[in-house]
Image 1: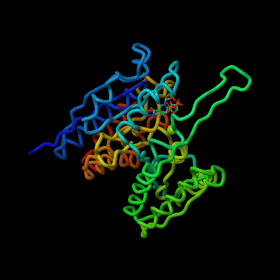
Image 2: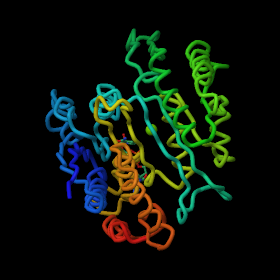
Image 3: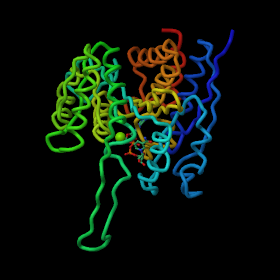
Image 4: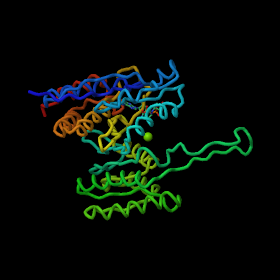
Length: 354
Ligand code: NAI
Ligand code: MG
């Protein structure tokens, strides 16, 4: 029959980023073959290694080269010796901003067979919707009087009405679709300009989604509640900084950074969206073939969903959750001895057979 083909820009990056993307592609190819979907992968060597050799994470026209791809799969960028702000501002942030990927979506689930750090973890299944292109991570500001006793730094947070409204609209719509409630992370008791503005826009947006129950919580109290009672959350919407911290915390609560996925979405689909595991390049285990490929494989599932193939996405998710629930095979980070390849092979075997 007809095969629908997608062009995927592959950016393995550094360290284990290069070890977890091949499993994700293998899973995509396997599930694609069953659903009439094909993938053409274009690899790009953008990384700290490239930065060391050529002085830039990516070429000057890098973003133009992937502008017309259907999606971007990214492994991880960052390596000892290259300052982390170089890898972030030289690659990840330009992609997120140029391609208007203003939603960073991180599903948090405690999976059967993955023991988390919490003693009695209930059913945990929530989503963090993080604002991804403005807020606290702004370029506005500067440093003065370097090296003098009155040295100083100023960094301005930038919250725009359209920028906040669009991410809130996404979060409220998602909460409505899931039939559950929404929590807005705030700190309007301490941050007295941007956060009250955020709160006002949340209250305004809520009137357009009368079916969604919502509340706001101060970020400090919220992180405590996520640790103490993660089962009570469903959709959490947060600014760039709060969402960044929340989503790593939540990933840890759900059993580790090695399995957590993230999607950087341009919901309008004017530009490609980018899918990347939450973890970094893990220099301590890179090159050993023992990285957990689950975060990247879960990303592949999210990418299928975004491309409009929910059945294929569910099949990928079902395959790795089936392996976790029915076998003791785990990579080292989850207490096992399996290699990346051994675990990936089990997932590939499970596709279409569970
Ligand atoms: P990391 O996530 O690379 O590693 C933290 C710990 O978790 C390490 O012990 C590592 O071995 C383990 N780990 C992470 N992912 C794993 C996986 N898939 N399987 C098994 N174990 C795993 O964070 P770290 O060490 O703070 O950062 C290392 C580099 O990665 C830095 O240069 C940092 O900037 C970069 N980084 C990049 C990110 C990205 O590309 N989005 C995100 C976080 C860090
Ligand atoms: Mg983070």
